[in-house]
Length: 468
Image 1 (cartoon, rainbow, N blue to C red):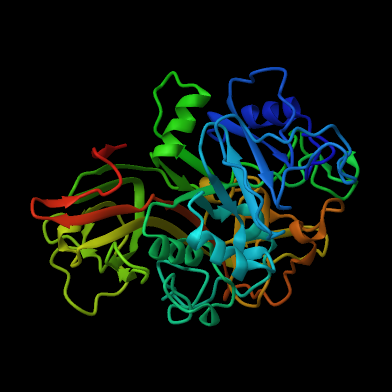
Image 2: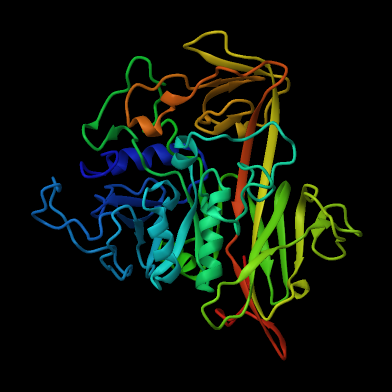
């Protein structure tokens, strides 16, 4: 939005591209890095919110050497409170009319242990990022794997290696879900989860401003060929809504995060009923224990199984011991009365994973085209979507285009920051007839807290049930 930002993209250029993309956006947060973003001149059929990201302990102020534009040391209206925190890599987003702040990509920073410690005790933490497409693209780690029995809650890890309530040493990479559950179990209050594309390098970078794509780059008529259309926050607002409506719903936790799975749900005192628009693998993590005292909640992993009365439903009622991954189903009926404990939270997430066998691997070093054994779901191969490959460790691939059962992925992008472009991706070691391209889409609901009383389960943080 200005030279201080990671991208320098003009707000109107960006909003016009997002509006024309057809990726389902109704509202957009215009995010400034260390200072408010420059407002767009037009509406572009999108509601916009003012957001500021900060990572240096205090807002950029006039006269600071690294500030190349006049700076306003005030966060967006109604957000905050603004407090100096002596952790340079603690990325914080302040959203218009939402008090407190949201922690962004904590797992990528070298001071992640300090960040986690701060999140557990800071009353101003309102939420955190649970999905970031830049992080997913940038991390070079072993994911996914050839084995079928990948943990349904944490599919980028082997089942026995990393759980949200496990020790950090058990994880190859500290996952956002680990941070989320650890913070929830320690803070014992709602901490909301966000999903986002991350506004890195649209048509410019923080050093050079706007730039033209190089000859070897993917050519496109949009401002960003892979920086949006990866993640959404699905907010409960009226059909004719304003930025204030969005902020109020986010403030109340009336939203869910998604990387491409659509949900509707009904939350009562004792039941959570969820409906997806397609069969999904549901998982329920959480914590249980005492609301008082400093001891964190114990880990809660709810066993799910197919309903005995409805094949389209999975439930936690009537499940025996030794249940494995629940079958994919569009509906979830979660009976909270089945959870033993005086105080607990449950957190529902849904996963769609599709494995596409590779029948032919790229034959050209400069043009990476995979031929698949079957035609992929269009939702999985939209321009810019991430696909992982089984076999050797590599960064995920970025889809450039798809025709029939042929998927072309990005092989070269000459500009931008090296840690967020596919310059470290390789097709070496992928074997036709053996390996697969794997597409994943997720949804994460907000945690539901309950307290046992003489009259039954009650929400200790809300006076009324939430229906979305």
